[in-house]
Length: 180
Image (cartoon, rainbow, N blue to C red):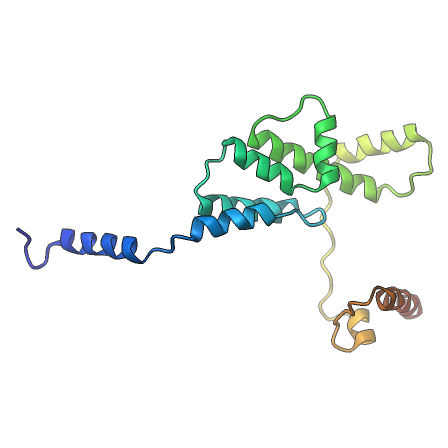
């Protein structure tokens, strides 16, 4: 039998308690959240963190076929399509993650290169050069500097009306030009 201070009694009691009152819908809810999860903008790291968290909650294996299919479904359509156009096509989860990161980096570099109406070979050479260089850190914003958005809108909130948002952008650029 057990002694009064036997640790095994408490371990069994805790195990039985957890089994009796465990949330049985956690895995189902994680699956539903995984099915709805999508990458927003170029935020690949946030998407990966949310995906891994939900994958662990759902109890899925990292290399399982359905895990990979849900991961690919959540990528932005253009990123997914571009990865499929490249050779070789990724097969494992790690290969897909690396390919998605490369594609997002390529898109960010292309966006920073400027207009598309220049000669394609010159643009290609600038892209190759930009990808060879290590990424530069963005300058930190001065917290004491005047926030033009907050000055225009009062509390810095944004309006849901797209016409008003365009008007706000025009007003912001006007005041930025005036304040320089």
